[in-house]
Image (cartoon, rainbow over all chains, first blue to last red):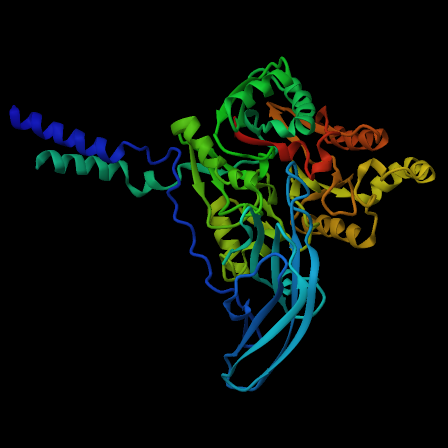
Length: 174
Length: 371
């Protein structure tokens, strides 16, 4: 009798301990997908990615400079053209449902020529001051009409220029 | 030892894969079923913009609908209840204790309960602009807040994808997904378009139709599924005809922008082409497309729209809560007529105070459960 009681008690405690928080209620149990560490646009076997030049943290007021890295993954020489565009958007006001449509800050077309398996880093100077309190996106895409979604390219970099009491700072999203 | 084994066995059964899997059904249709539980946000600083809309809408709702009002604090709820005045539906507070915006729709998608199951709220990985916008950062937590407040019948999950709830349009068969969701996720959370579509179809448990082209806004600003494979798609060209006289008078007076639309109405060929592209893609998906006037502004965000609606199905009766705007009565009448021709009973909601903030009725109110 004592053993049965103890066993029942232990079983109850075991279940209670592990089911105290209902599995299906108010939780956030799903582990999110891992984020892709570095966004890449692949154009005819050339992988293109972008980063702030010298790993610098960009701030409001800066004239952004970027390193465009191109890696030829093929055994043939390659030459690719890529459009790089930087946009900024911000909330209209605190009541807005969403942020404004992005406005163009800077755009350039870059041709990169590579030997087989070669990697090149090209520095891009925007000569444009980053606005404060904005979401800045820098996209890479193959040139051409924006008729199909695949041609829209990728957001290679996304960061914000947050004004804080201590002065501007930037939170890189990736 | 026997107890541990017994307890372990019970746990194993109760946490079997079947139980641990999301017990909810597919993502809720926006046009089928009777409204049961709604969620809206109230932030007192948005009172002038949203209370007139909520007063009109809640006043028209039936008494058996529960409306959960997400508020930063209890005083805000008291302010909301007093501002809205007497209504037939039940107002229930969800006090979250942090900043929020006034917009509920984009915060989560609801997955309806299957038999005896729970409702699941699916929140995005993050909110666009959260880094520069404290209230938007607070919005990111609202799905979890609701699940915590409503207990075991509602659970919350965080998606691995970036999206706004308004980027999806769901009916009884399909989920239409706006191109901007792919743009936000490609090479950020997913490697390819195919991976994105597979992931969404698995999560939403309905076939996914990814639009290749659409205006850069939430779906509910320019399209609405009315059920029975009928899709309403906005048409600026129709709106242009209806406001031509007013617009000419306005231009002569040359005071401020027509209807406070930033930059004026957008009747450009480029914008019209995007709306037409949505219509063509819906037709290609096998939908009967019905065009309805929509008046977009040149800022690409402000719309006078008649598809930003809430639909209710009460047995064989179909109702629509339809926005209207003071100052464009011919446009309002045309929008109403389209819904009436589809067999809907129309209850109008004056959204004059809200549309300048880039959203309207459908954007302000989210649906938690339908019968």
